[in-house]
Image 1 (tube, rainbow, N blue to C red):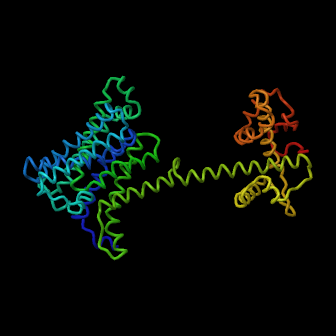
Image 2: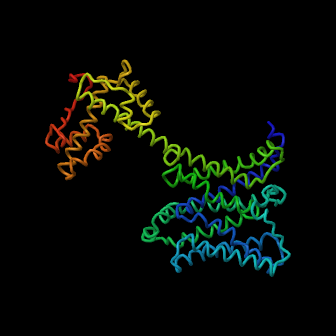
Image 3: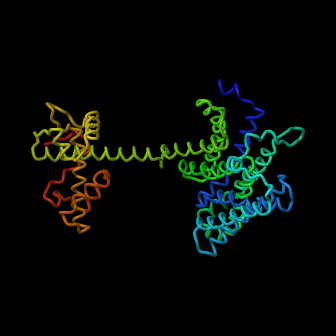
Length: 448
């Protein structure tokens, strides 16, 4: 409720519109920068356009938008061309060529600003964060409606980028993954590369004045990088990146208004907060991405480790009861033999008891009939692998246990049958231990 008391669609609506258009236009092309490992190109262009601004001012003696825009676009395109030229003829990687080009052009721009354009107002804050909060003040009349110039420019750039990605989707996809194959199919991968670079330069320059370098660089890379972690195909990756860029732009402006009020301030820079929102979405993807998330991978590894520990627990109980059918085992003794930590062991025991694979009586553990069936399959798999590896891989019997230990957890009935056939129905493993007979149903036969 507090937000809407300070909200004005005439102001905040246009600010969000400019942020969304910048984010969408940048992320559309950013997907291919990420795939081509050219993530720093947007950053390079936003630094390198400074000499273009200085030369445009020197020639036109004006700070009007048209000559500044043209000068910046020309230098932005030259940055992309020079980067490719240095990479190709200097035989250096993409990152090194970008570093050489944009630092050289940035230094040249500073010299030109000092020597030939002393009257240019160079505000570091404006360069970094832009003036997106003032978007609504600079308007142009379109069909009788007053539309902010930044929104109009960014809208045109977004439409151009969307058409480019839509019309050349197949070519962009193929040239991103295999440029040589793309060339052999009848179109020039090099020409498509330069077209992409030109549009990246135009997008960076169009966004530079209104939203600043931080936001445009962030939107080129962060939403596509986030989408890359969430999708395995290019088309969904593009749609997800556009959605995430939109969410980051909208939530960034809301947070720029609301969060500072929690600490007694009026607001903070919207462009910076949009970049922070995009980074927060990336952080969530890094943690919770279904396939690549750090937390998900950790839980998946722990789940596998617990499954293996459960298998080892019932298999060890089977081997102990194989020697003495009436034997029962103390849990602490069992944990010591398995070298398991206390938390994992307790968790696995609870799961095994819930599945009725083990039972506890007077503090001692024993296998139930279903548990003995599962354990018999594991021990059979282990001993079949030992026999197979000894017979066909010429591995010494003294060294075969650890290898069979790893394989037994991923051996199903069909593979056990193949191993049994390959070893000609061997009844003992290389150590002289009996290989249990395969049984289909737990409890249908005597366990003796």
